[in-house]
View 1 (cartoon, helix red, strand yellow):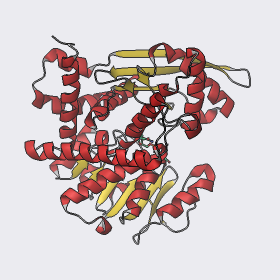
View 2 (cartoon, protein in one colour):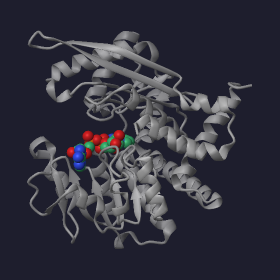
View 3 (cartoon, protein in one colour):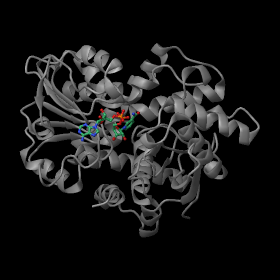
Length: 414
Ligand code: NAD
């Protein structure tokens, strides 16, 4: 099933219980606007490459469209559409005043040098500029786009706007309007969510074993904060392989190792045993955290997952078929739209700071993040208990109700 179809499937599972008018349902199932652009690049050897670029605006009933853009060869309209809808539901689930959008360019950024990548970014900005804006649609980093790329983005946007429009994109470097705490925010949010779940389940974090798939921005900070809370992280992986240690991995040492290792990967890290991706996902741990890629828990492996708790740090790591099997087996799953919402929440704080030209200290950022994540978790947890729903369906239910309410208030269907 495609990513857009999977997001629609989870939406429909919740929509069934909500008695939505068919027209309203149709408005929520389809994006408000889709833009496809040509992104030409003259490379330094003189050859011309023409890439496809996308920006999908799913829904802006609750505020500006919000969502990152990625540079990856697999980017296509279907993927961007699914991720844009996921952003609408994520922002509404944690109650921040944004809608959902997503973008990308179908390019392998590792085939370009830095100057070419900068030129590609600037051309992409000029192509999507007619439909974005500080109060309209606010992009951010995603796969293979980082703070440096956001710096290039804001410079081109300022030039086109002939104004300082730094709030047009989030995830910027601190010196040009980024927020303290943004880099760690997604992993911090995943850890906050995990610890909140353990609290309501009456489980002691210091007795928990954890496996984390992916050791990039999200996975490494997730592992770091759970390690700090006393959990035993027994397995992590990245694209270079899996690393296990029953005694518990030294996560700060692994993060330090990646700062200077080849391509910042874990390959060659000494104090761990090699394990396979399947061993990581299917190993005997208390908590499994997929934090790398889409479609990792599927109908093929869901029956073999041994962890009684799954926290979706990545976007869409579980397919609908995999999700159904986990549910049948009584596995508690915290969905992506709740678990990884810490990133967009601190992006929201960055935007607020940009619009006010008043910058917060890191404690203020983290205190607000903790409050928002705890409130969102508790609302979703309580609804799930009250109506006997999965946490995913409860999260979608709350999100859909908020978006429909906003559409109603704006008179979009009367
Ligand atoms: P990243 O590029 O920093 O890290 C991705 C990690 O996954 C890397 O360690 C990479 O080596 C690893 N990986 C890739 N293929 C793998 C494989 N086959 N097996 C094991 N590991 C593999 O990206 P990120 O920002 O950490 O994003 C990871 C996930 O989190 C994505 O689904 C992303 O959409 C989601 N997410 C990220 C943020 C954020 O703020 N960074 C926010 C919300 C959601």
